Length: 95
Image (cartoon, rainbow, N blue to C red; front, side):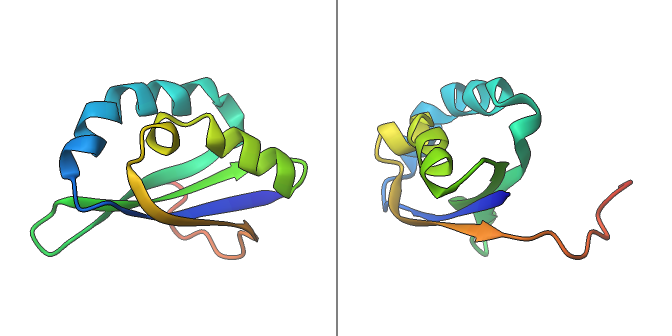
């Protein structure tokens, strides 16, 4: 099953910048478990949150995978939610 993490950053953008390289390495280590991910942006293009989708057996496993992310461990997110998600339409395929 797929699980989406929807997160809002703290007011300190430096936290994201400091953890970003380790975060990207972590995402790479997930291999095929990572379906997609990327930052939310504000009007000026500054990264202000994240959307990531991973494949996991259940909610507990999804939470464990996300807990290993440096963004989670280093307090980049002020708030987040992890919930089951179903891919229904994918017009981005092939872009």
